[in-house]
Amino acid sequence: MVDLMLLAPEIIVALTGLIVLTIGIFMGSSSKNVLGYIATAGCLAALAMVIGNFSASALMFSDTLSVDPLSQFFKLVFLVVALIVSIASIKYTEDNKDTEIFYTLVLFATFGMMFVASANDLMVLFVAFELASIATYALAGFEKKNPRSVEASMKYLLMGALSAALLLMGISFVYGATGTTSIPGIAQNMDVLASNAIGLLAIVLLIAGFGFKIALVPFHMWAPDTYQGSPSVVSALLAAGSKKMAFVAAFKVFIVALLAIQADWRMAFAVLAVITMTYGNVVALSQRSVKRMLAYSSVAQAGYISMAFVVLTPMALTGGILYTLAHGFMKAGAFIATAAVVYMVIKEKRDTEIPDHLDNFKGLGKKMPITALCLTVFVLALAGIPPTAGYMSKFILFSSTIQAGMVWLAVIAILNSAVSLYYYARLVRYMYAMPHEGEKLAEPAPYVAALLISLVGVLAIGLWPEPFVKIAMQAASVLVGGI
Image 1 (cartoon, rainbow, N blue to C red):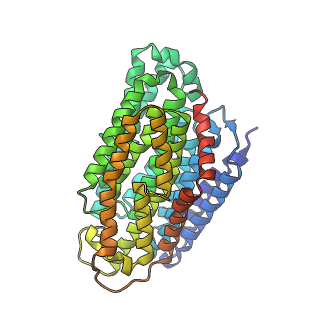
Image 2: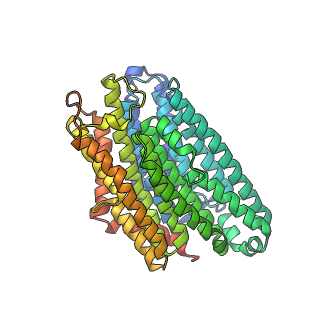
Image 3: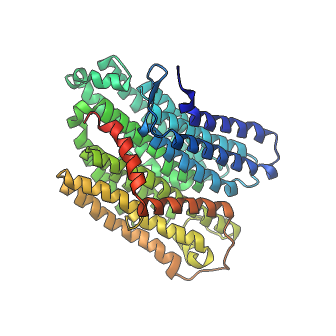
């Protein structure tokens, strides 16, 4: 009998989405703020269920779903990001007549991401992937009268459709060779795929498909425009949430299902990781839009996490998995801080085409001290400065790379981290060393609450890493069984 309690987090998130949609239809715009609190409560309840059953392990629905520490870890990542986004969005959706649609899409996107984490079959994984993706396409274009938002949504939709087609073709070739879409079943029939030329074609298609979702260079072209054009709170969900969905899916497909032919895909990931981290950091140097800079920074961070596929040791996988949680706090926090600045620019009615332009961050330390302080910690964490989550996750990932004998890869990653310090430090300089215009502002409570949650997460992982490393090791143990 299926233990539905293990699916309680997904059920809570889906039901909360339906409740928000139903209630919101009958409410006036001025009273819809309560929907943000309901969505937040739903995320908190689901988060408590995941933490309570973290070590649970079970196969469900003809083994198409697997609840284990790996899936629980990534559900935790998705729910933390959804919680931060939901809280911050209470201000963003203030007096918006479509508030219920916004929160429903956020919750359904989270629901899809959670099912990707539990998927034990390629078709279930694909369907869950698309459920989450379709919701995020709509969220990217939520500001229907903003041409940048519409453009972001269209580019994201078109690139998403292409990546879905590539993924589906890759899955069909794997099925054609092995006769199954079950992830453990593919692993058991790997000798058939390894001896067939169709296996190499399947790997190329799967890497390209996941490369678009993860935003690996050269499949990254949609990310900067989409992150910049989307509402900042949606950019937080995309960069900190949906990208991690692609990572957990890639972990399952390559390290569990296709491990026996790792020689065919490890070198490809090595090349993509180096190109991605280098290109992302170099291009970020010249950006004047902070959201665009964070987008290219996010591309570079994807390169770091991809090192786990190359090193492929238990400690490297632990580092890669821990990095996804750390990045969730760091990147979500950075985009929420940018959302607070955009709010300030709109409130002051500044005549600017790019509200997240670097010039609008001048003197932020005096105008919005909490936002500036949090953003400073987030960007220093992204650069890998101790004692933050970014330092701890990079330390584990880079040191495991050296221990595996891939010193060249670790050196490239360290040099890239040094390069990134320049554009992060430039942002800090603008906030604290440049003169500001206007008076000090009252920072909106929802943004401050979301920022403080992110700040606590970034510092907790950096200052008290043992419990976080322990659960990351538990999650990695699901993958390393076959290594």
